[in-house]
Image 1 (tube, helix red, strand yellow):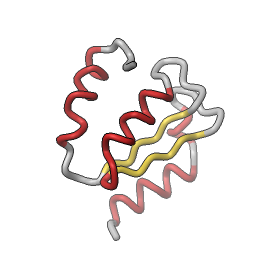
Image 2: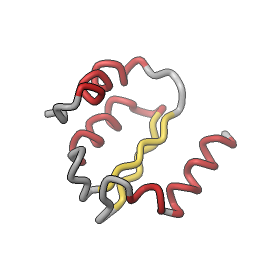
Image 3: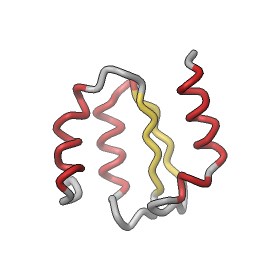
Image 4: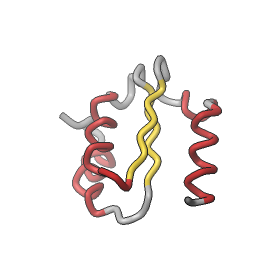
Length: 79
């Protein structure tokens, strides 16, 4: 099951082609995009993806989470 939003439908078809590291952040209480969609996308990304699920997080909650900010810095700075 994928959210019936044109961009998300397209994303599920293209996500396996991503060749760069990806940080995927999703709140488990998101009412716009189901958390199961994000989990499926994370599985498709495999080892090139890092998935952070925010307990109780809604659709915009990731923007205010310090753990997310740190993960973004780590991704940009590289290994």
